[in-house]
Image 1 (spheres, rainbow, N blue to C red):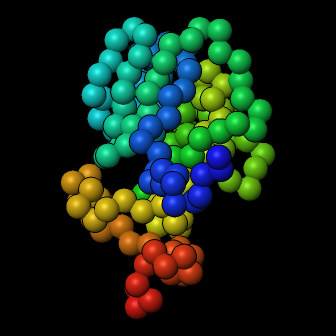
Image 2 (image 1 turned 120 degrees about the vertical axis):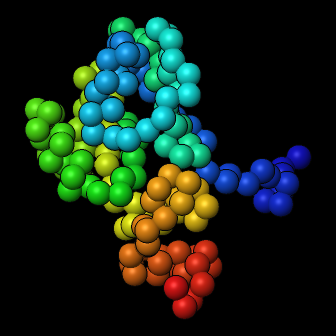
Length: 154
């Protein structure tokens, strides 16, 4: 019997992404050079790295093969700063209309500016992260308003 749309669970968001790395400690060191985060758990096989109310799970896999198109995106508060830091680290940025690069294990990462995208953290979470000053751009608000996910007056 076919389920009706009302009989399906609603996807609310992404809680976490697990990525494979060759060395968990070196992954924390690499990502920690350009991102601010909290480490919840860490051992030689895995680490849980929190960005406020979401996390990335680093999983050790020394045989990791590089990604081609598969990628994950991280929203940041200051994309130009992240780009400058990555360049200073010697990270090769990919030829893309986005700020994409491969981490040392071949995971393709796309950095985007939080204020310019629809994805939204709750105000209390942003405040808890020290980012309560971030406000969505007019374009991002229009996209959210078109879906009924933001008030028409901002």
